[in-house]
Length: 226
Image 1 (spheres, rainbow, N blue to C red):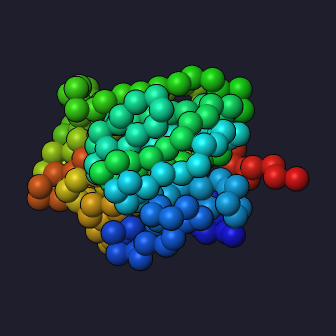
Image 2 (cartoon, rainbow, N blue to C red):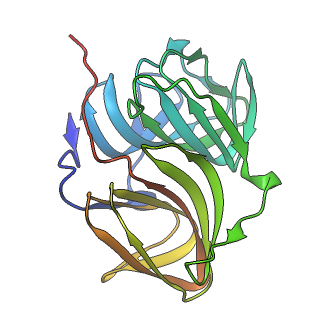
Image 3 (cartoon, rainbow, N blue to C red):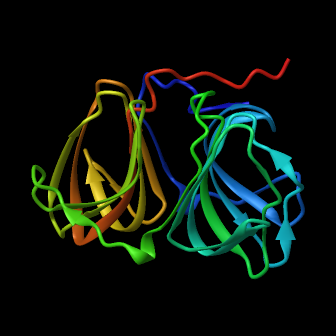
């Protein structure tokens, strides 16, 4: 399956308007944003776990990165409430579930194969810091290396936000709204810009809280399944 698989062109989806599509596991459904592959795929999705649902134990051959949007995500390593960011590197394994239900934004098979860095950040326990070079923007760092930068950004109401996407940019609206060009993105609105493109957005009247990932689109490949 290919969905928004041309990473040289911009892509956008108002995920909150999509129907939930069943996954192979009962009680787990998803809204797909981009995808190359079938069940083993390079994929970006919003995934919903109904109360009491679980996924089978599995190993992440290409790594897994997720941000909890609603509820509490759980596995044998702990509980992760809304606002938690997690990186499970290639070779890691777990058995995901949710006792009371949850929704997560998740990216699969998008790690450097040599990456072994495990990260857990509870954004409820840290405050974003005003960016010295970007007026109206505060930043809470989640992860950064020489390949990519991941953070939550808080944009003040009506702030004009510009960002050079040297290695590509991806943004998911967590709260509030933003306008990019003529398109307005509310909660769960998703935007992906290719290498070399420029993000120029305006925050809505209530501001915007945005999950932002940059630099990661220089080298895009699907998982090897053969």
